[in-house]
Length: 169
Ligand SMILES: Cc1cc2nc3c(=O)[nH]c(=O)nc-3n(C[C@H](O)[C@H](O)[C@H](O)COP(=O)(O)O)c2cc1C
Image (tube, rainbow, N blue to C red; front, side, top):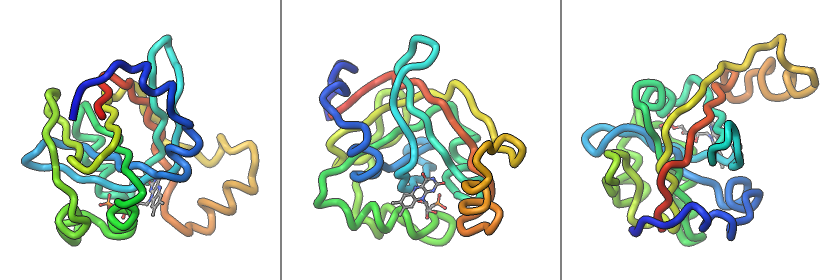
């Protein structure tokens, strides 16, 4: 895994990268971390910094790790690792050793964060901002009903804005 210039991201199609490839959000250090699959989010610019926007439900075990730690990584994988992403998106680190089940190999980065040897691209990020979504803030009530009030997947997401500080491939 080699450190690259952030301009590498200009070659990526963000819609494809997050919405179709999916990503692992990993937080913690090599001795204690958790990871989960995410397909909602974005990459872009805010406060003149390159950032990622993440949406994590409070029920996720990973949420605890993101809350406790200053940093996290976003890892993107070749199609061959689809099964690993399905495992990390359907099981909780509370109940099993997901990384072992997904057959992923953790790699410790210079900043102390964790990614995986199988990743084709890793963004090493630092938290800048968080906000818990609130019922009153939904302008389109259909979204509120569909994704929250019927509680198909849990509580209101926490929105995190993280700065992309290092890029590896
Ligand atoms: C394709 C896919 C995308 C997902 N995207 C998100 C997401 O953006 N935000 C979120 O909170 N959960 C998302 N999930 C659900 C979590 O990955 C899942 O609940 C996971 O088991 C949480 O693991 P944890 O409890 O170990 O953190 C997604 C799941 C899948 C399969």
